[in-house]
Amino acid sequence: MGRAFWILVAGRFVSALGDGFFFPFTALFLSRVHGVPPAEVGLIMAAAGLGSLAGRLPGGALTDRIGFKPVVLAAMIGAGGAVIAAGFAPSKGGFALAYAALSFLVWGSFPAFTHGLASLAPAHRREEAFSIMNLLQNAAIAIGPLVGAWMVARDFRLLFVADGLSFFAFALIVGLFVPGQRASGERVSLPEGLGEAASTAAADAGTSAPMHGGRAGVAGLVREVRRVFWLPPPSEGRFWRVAVGSCLMALFYSQMGSALPIDIELRFGRAEWYSLLWTVNGAMIALLQLPTTRWTHHYPRRVRMAVAALVYAAAGLLFLGAWPVAPYVVAFVVLTAGEMLFMPLVPAELASVAPVGQGGRYQAAGSFVNGAGWALGPLVGGQILGRLGHDALWWTMVGTALLAAWVMRPLPERPFHPIEPSFP
Image (cartoon, rainbow, N blue to C red):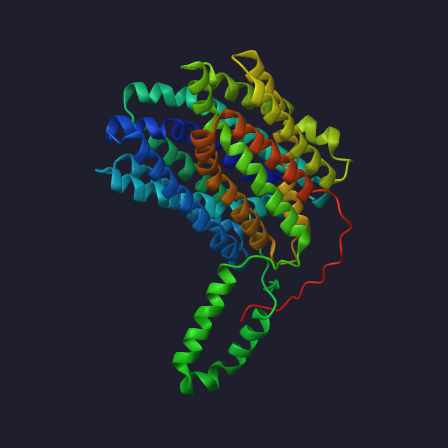
C-alpha cells in the first residue's frame, strides 16, 4: 500500500473517533436535552436514514465527474458544520434537519471514499485494503464511547463539537496530503443510451438551442437526473447479486442495534450487559480482521460471501435459543466471524465489476441498495417482534441469511462489454 492510502485511512480513523463520540449518545441527547419521547426519537432516526439514502447515488455520480478527493473534502467540511449545528439547534425540529443533512453528507461521501481506497490500493490487495479500513474504523468506534461518556458527564454539546472537529481534521488531512486520482482527459462511462444523447446534445448546442431552448433544457435536465440517480441495468447480474445479498445481510445485521436489545429486555428484564456484546465485536474485529482476510483470500470471493451468509444464519439460530449471558456472547462471536469474512468483500467486488470510469457510480449504487437494508431492517424487525414475537423474528432472520447465501452463490459469469462514451 502506498503513502496516500495510509493517509486516507488515517483520516478516516480520526473521523471514526468522532463517530464513536457522537452516535452512541444521540438518543440520550434527544431525550435529556430536547425531551423527545422514544417514538419521536425513532422518527428522527428514520429521517436521518432517508437523508443517508438520498446522498449515495449523487455522491457516486459526482465522484465519477470530478474525482473522489473534492467530494470527500467538501462532504467532511459540510458534515462538521452540520453536526455542530445539530448540537446547538434550539429545537428538536432543528436537530432533525441538521441530523438529516449530516447523514446526507456522510453517506453521500462514502462511495467517493471507498472508490478512493480502491484506486489507491493495488487491485490484488483491495480486500486487504478494505479489511484495514474496517479494522481501524471499529478500533476508533470502540475507543470513542469511552471518551464520549466523559464528555456527557461535563457537557452534552462537547460531543457535537468533538465530532465536528474530527470531520474538519479529516478534511484537512485529505486536502493537504491525499492526491487527486482523476487524470485530465479520462473517459467516463455512462449508462447505455445516455452517452449518445449527451454527445448529440453537445454537437447540436449551437444550432438547436435557439429554436428549441425550452425543450433542450428539459431534455438536458432529464439526462442529468438519469445520470445522477442511476443504477446498473438488471442484466448486470454480477452487480445485482452482490448488492441484493449485501442488502439482505444488512437487514439481518441491523437487528443487533434495534430488535435484539428490545428482545432481550422483553424476555429477561434490564440487560446492562448488552454493551458487552459490542465490546466483544469491536475487540474481535480490531484483532482478527486483517488475519481473517489474509487466511481466506485465496478462496473465490463469491464462495466466501455465501459462507459468510451461512455464518449469519448460524448466529440467528443461536439467538433463537440464547439466554443470558454466555450464549449471547457466543452468538455474537459467531456473528462477528461472519462480519469479518463479509465486510471487505463487497466494496472490493464492486470495484472489480465496475467499468472504467464508473467506479464511484458502482460503489454508490451498491451502497444505496445496502442502505435500503439498513433503513428497512429496524422497521421489519420491530414489526415482527411486536406482532409475532421472538421465535418469528429469528426464524425470519435465519431465512433472510439463507436467502442471501443463495443470491450470492458462485455462478458462471458472462463477459461484460461496457460502452465508454465521454461526458459532453
